[in-house]
Structure formats: structure tokens, C-alpha cells
Length: 72
Image (cartoon, rainbow, N blue to C red; front, side):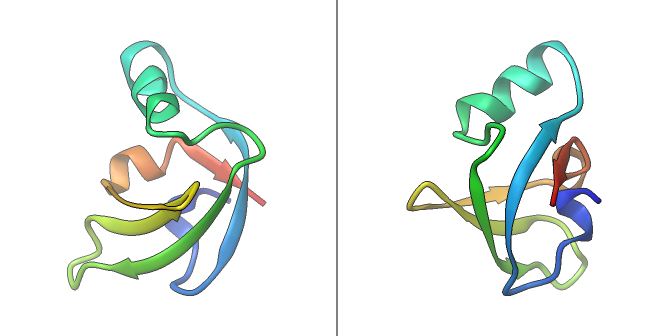
């Protein structure tokens, strides 16, 4: 399951980052690493972007980037 599939109000844990190079580095620079807790705050009306809370701050992430984050 990926972050894109998570429902609003869920708290999930990152199990793996899929992707390579600059994309993977950018996701890690945002504080999203293996074992991090993520709370899904809201989803835009058309589904993109997704607003999440990571490490105590709010972050908006695109669906394409959310597909690269596997959760449990």
C-alpha cells in the first residue's frame, strides 16, 4: 500500500521509499524516512495534492510523489 491509497484521518508508518536519485532525495529531505509516522490531514477536491503532518509540521505532497512512499 502506498501513501496515495491512505484515507483522511489515518496515521500510517513509512515502510519503504521507492524511487531513485533526485526524487528519493527530495522525499527524504522533507523528513519522510523509513519508520516515520505520517498523519493524513486532508486531500484536495480533485485528489492532488495530499496534506499530511510529518514530524510536527504540515506538508503538501503530490500524488506522484505519494506513490513512491510505501506504508503499513
